[in-house]
Image (cartoon, one colour):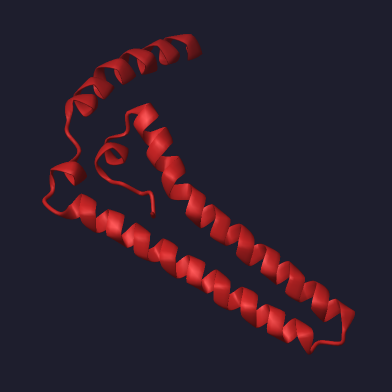
Length: 116
């Protein structure tokens, strides 16, 4: 029973995937949409980096006037978390562009997600 279901699933997936692979990407065919997506990604990355700078400077300023050791630890942890988020934000676009192109994803071929 399980074996026949597995064989049917495999045959169905071969037949059903073929028409999907033949379709072109709607995003790539739309006029101006790839540039809009790329611009949106660049703006969000820039805002994320500016947010990191603001959070880092604010935490450093508050840390100078804080006497409690627990509060200083909390501020340092907050700064580390902000840094991790910014690094992920900066790395995510180029990583998707490279891996998406290698995997043949249509969105990665027409949309540039590298923020610089």
